[in-house]
Image (cartoon, rainbow over all chains, first blue to last red; front, side, top):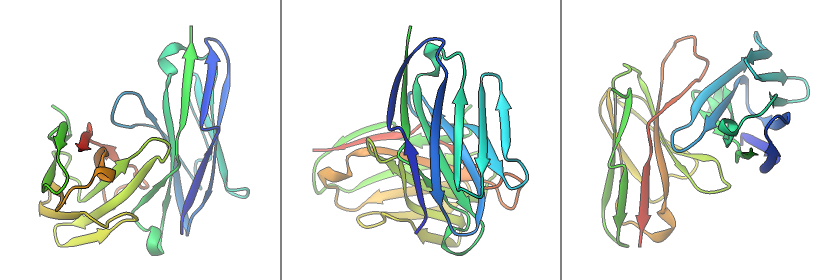
Length: 114
Length: 115
């Protein structure tokens, strides 16, 4: 059974701090790892990491994938109050019972205080 | 206009009632999914469909059923709602084969409360 574990489950920081969110996984025939940000309602896509793209960066956010150790991290530098959200990690498989599906972690609740 | 829409957005019902949640999409995607979200548990897959003739159970399908009426429409039913089905429900879509490597696009969610 596919499994995704995120840590920490919650995090409180002040504006300007740097945070690192963790995601470890076990999945049949790994295909991709995705990060989503969920503010009020629907998750919105941040990054996708695959065998051919193990590092992504967009502004203050960056993510890396370690396929050997089966984990990913999401870094946010110079945090702002607008970064407050639930960050979801999900893993997609390429075959077997994982085919075409995403398995989500529990999410990390990030709160950024002014 | 939103690419993935869900109706209703909020619903309060009583134990034993039949409830249908609807999802429509204009993205032209073949694949559609239903998830529920509970605090501290992330998103859990209820049912998914790869095309109109294909329906598959997810990890928590008991107590739920689905109907794929068309490529653009995927409905989730609770035949006899119970309080522990109180949750936030999301519909999602993805493209196939595409180059999106499993990326899914989510609707705005339906908050369901069963009293």
